[in-house]
Image (cartoon, rainbow, N blue to C red; front, side, top):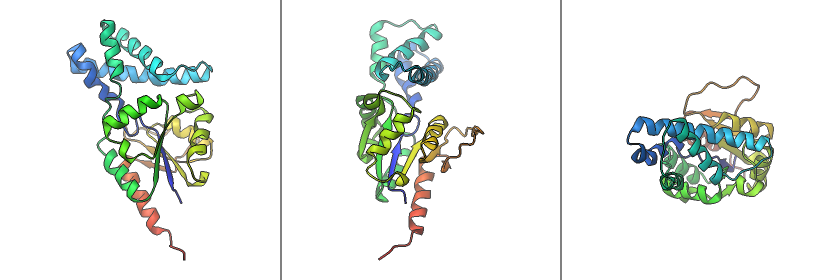
Length: 234
């Protein structure tokens, strides 16, 4: 029986692309702000992958700033240094997805333990968790960037989650919006849930999530139904 859910945060509980709201006042146009946000996030993910693969870890606050500069340069946007620093400093202003808060509330009411293991620094995770309202449902926030100096899907990240789950491995459910993260979780023998909001096809490489859902509310309902099926023993 699942007792602990370990969540990714960005792209799972909160929407990275909400940062476009912070960018728009500096570029004066919403479509351009969205394009910059898209490329900022794309290069952030790519940068985390190849720095980890190269064993050249760069903490996410510094990498995030470098990727913002890259996205601005790609779109030929020249901003003063103070503006760039201000945008990066507001990366905690990430909204929860519309389904997130109600789903987390349901999961807590089911008696589940909810933890985050995520790439950003603990300060960054706490910041967007407070802004989005998710923090009140979380039992622990863990930064794999801070603690193992590696980004997902490095095996050490999943081992960190296993070590800190507070329950046997077979009671853990790893929850993420990213299929590449699912690949790492399955490789480490974890049950996992893919929150596939973008309705992306599954890459046919022999990796099958325990659950594939369109949003967290659907996952909360599935878990609740499964728990009700378990017979109570004296």
